[in-house]
Image (cartoon, rainbow, N blue to C red; front, side, top):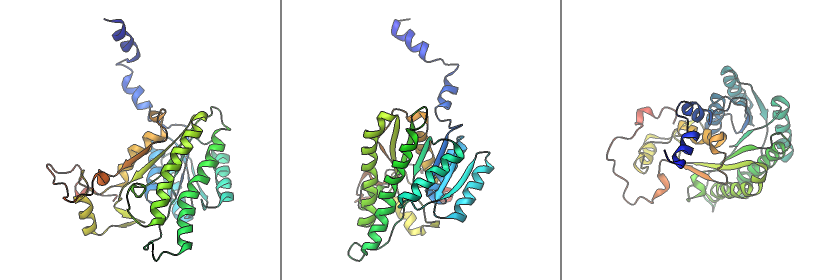
Length: 294
């Protein structure tokens, strides 16, 4: 056996490898929060973090729904609480982080997911609507990340994982100027904060979902869903479950050397303008009847 191969053999123990790999994704004992965690992507994020072992706080303006999610997490044997907060208000954000730390003792993982949209064309959208979308989606993400970072650097060991929720609207013209600009801002803000806060062992990354099959709890119309299937190389409408893996990766030790990245989770939807929709060669992994959470 050569010296180099011997060194590899020492590092890679076949007997312990499965447990070592699984432990990379174990969040047991970690303390997390999810903004906008009462429904949709936020609820999915909270549940997957809890399933991986973390205690999870739900930070949201929707008290009834948020309390239900917190109850469900406690049903998994994890600690959870609901904290009311409008993320566009700096004082409320600071109070929310303080409440989470008072309960959990520290903060290891933060998912900044709270976001809104105001429908309408750019020629008709009122400035108040623009201000509110930017205030929640972009300013709110910055306020939360800043407060989370300040807590993380007070802790020992000094480290943390911050995950901001972007959108494919950061990459393409998908909605209107307010929403698209807010999400483009979130993605670039993520890079800026990652470059600045890596010195504290804080990883800052973002996830950009595509067109999830539910919008504010309502299923997209079937004709729209079929259109999305036809324009997505992987051939099915995006489910909340499709975000579980990326979220767990960025929240866990598996991503310790990953920062400032935006993971696009859209089944390939944004890869082309699709003048000719891609024809399938084999059935997609997920059929229409299996798009259960979409």
